[in-house]
Amino acid sequence: MKKLFVCIIFIITVFSTFAYAYDINIIVNDKILYPDTGPVNRDDRVLVPMRAIFEALGASIYWDQENYSVTAVSGTNAIRVKIDSKTVEYGIINSDGMPVFTVKRDTDVAPAIINDRTYVPVRAVSESIGADVSWHDISRTVIVNSRHQSHNHIFYSSVCDYNKVYKVDTNGAVRTKLSDTPAKEVYYDNGYVYFLSLDDALYRIRADGSGEVKLTDCKTEVIKIENGVVYCLEYADAHKGNMHIIDGNDTDIGYAMYPVVNGGYIYYNVPDSASMRAYNIKTADISDVTMYAGRTLYTYNCVFYGNLILVEDGEYFNNIFAFDADGSNKRAINKSVSRICKNQQYDDNIIYINGDNGQDIYCVKEDGSDDSEIIKMPADTIFVDVLLQNGNDIYYKNMYRKEIYRINLLEKNPVYAGYGDTLKISGDKLFIVYDGLYISDLYGKNQKQIYGKVSDFFAYAGSVYAKDASYNNIVKVGYEGDYINLTNDMVCSWAADMENR
Image (tube, rainbow, N blue to C red; front, side):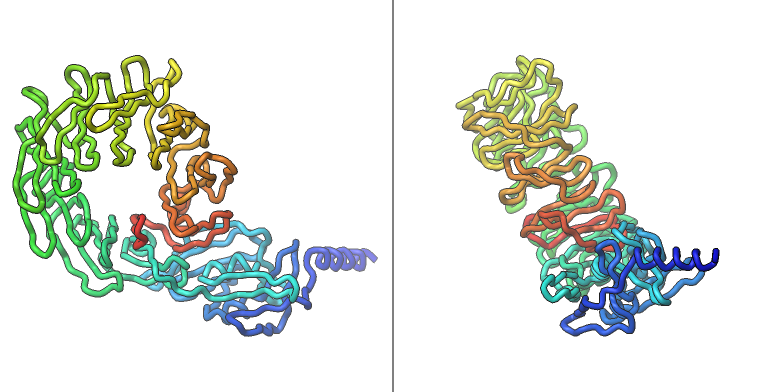
């Protein structure tokens, strides 16, 4: 009687946990799938026989009896699920042919063994190897389609494969190794990928992986890469070295410290000189940028604003001076204690913090006219800074607090925009990062979290491309919070061929 009771309890438990969903159809890449056992409905989630659906997607399946887990491999991507665990591991197959798992995600329902078959949640595992999953309610059909390769790409160095250089398209469909040379910094410009090797030599390779060349054979610091021209320091040490322009030719400007490329000039310092130098890239003419006797002017003390060089006095009245691009025509443009805001656009309104009576935000025209207050900050404000400018709107915050405000230069009406550390704008959307990635309109209204914490991101064509702060992989996030892993491996450095990256 006791055995019968136990059996009854077991049967009730099993059938209350899952039920075969014979009315659910599965279509994979436009073909109806007929597995030998049907889908299962568990906790309102569809589970399918893992081998059937993964092999239909071209993946290979491996069973690990010791760890009671299953690994699926598709190309260089891999996924591992453990029976009765909601944690799914994502990884890659490295150049040694070994799986490396670094990314973990929790699913709503755990994989299970049912009638000697491994069942997995169809959406979570299919999306991990480059497939999209949708549900057609009327026909009760799960539709799984391999993703189509997009024209845009992310380029990165893979920590999980000895820092070798890879690219992945922005649909996550195809991941391709570009170079076996380990890299620690990756750049993209005009159809080429540039990267610094672990020993700081600079390489260039076409985005299709062909034509790899070594551009420098010494410790190199990249200053800027633009329109096929590389500006870099060779034999670099702490932002000092021989300044080179590589554009088919290799022009050695000479020893330089703290170089900055802006417009048609390279600005830099030299030892034992109070002047900053301006090198005209087109004519190779060199001119001095000098404040006055006894004051050494460094590039990192300057704000390069359009064709102007802006400098805080720093010695006498702490007001703002402006120079023309070649260092000529020095003139004062205001009379107050000033700190120039670096994150501003060039639009003839120079935004600065007026320290005469606190930390008030002001703006002044290039010619020194219309010097006016935008907002007077509270008396207890210790340090305020402008984070971003978007047309006539600026976003600012007290750097010792997290509240971000938006104010219009013309209307001068501050509005609370959000709470966070950093922000960016794309189109009519405002993105703020704090304990997660948030999206709102430009006024901070209708804000919602669309992803967890990210360390770097940009928005393009209705999606956000971000580096996950926990796993250091790249994800593509939709504005409604849906996301896919673009890389299943940890990323050291990354770049993109989208124009606003």
